Image 1 (tube, rainbow, N blue to C red):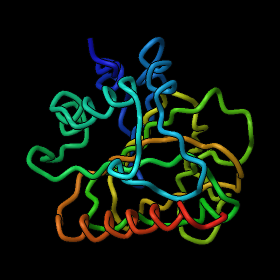
Image 2: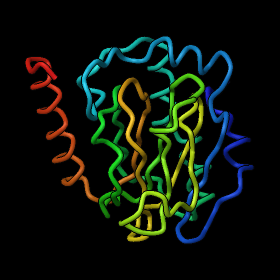
Image 3: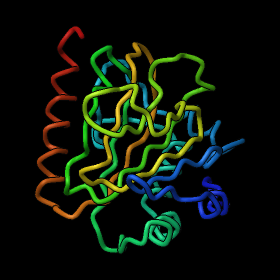
Length: 206
């Protein structure tokens, strides 16, 4: 059985204005969520880590395999009306949040679709909740706010309107980010930068 509730992903309504996004609570739940959380890689430093720099168990590995597989891709391609099949897929992981994280930004234009699968416990803190925003200047000019509860899947089409960020939070904030991309060279440059950063963090005291 799939670790993803693909029926729930397919059934959740797509928001189309001012940009396309969908929020699926319980996209991964129950034993599947517990397995993925139990085998989440041990990350003690902030920043984004490529899979190549992480060690993890079978539960998390199975989740990654499904992210790479055709079933979830097909559901999201139909929902967003995008031809995702054949596009490179970039997968990265975050385990810790710094106070400076969450500044308002747009994702790079070569990322066609961004997905965030949160693997936290139930989220109580007022910080660290992703906000979709009307523009680049005000974190409180909110279209929608989503707590990063475990199993919640947030997916949005990247364009010049898809501003997002969150209020500061310091501590564990775990998610898998996966992006379908249109530029392999840009993806490789970003992954190389994250790999270098991850290796430096093994020696630096932050």
